Amino acid sequence: MDSASVKKWAIFFAGILCAALIANALSTVIIGAAQLTGAAGFIISFVLYAVFFFGVLYIIEKITGVTFFRFSYD
Image 1 (cartoon, rainbow, N blue to C red):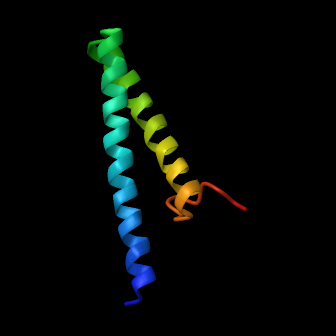
Image 2: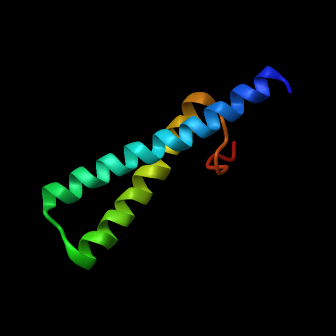
């Protein structure tokens, strides 16, 4: 296997992991600060997590050039 291919896969998995950790931390802080609980807290936390997750992946994609979910079409 080519070293460039291995590097691309390593960046791919590291990017997914980083995006998940950052999204979890940010959504937890915001939900905690807003003191939301119950169903409303769960739904808003889920939406925030998704927004942050895909936002971080988009930023990583723009910086590294590794394609995650084909966000850019250029």
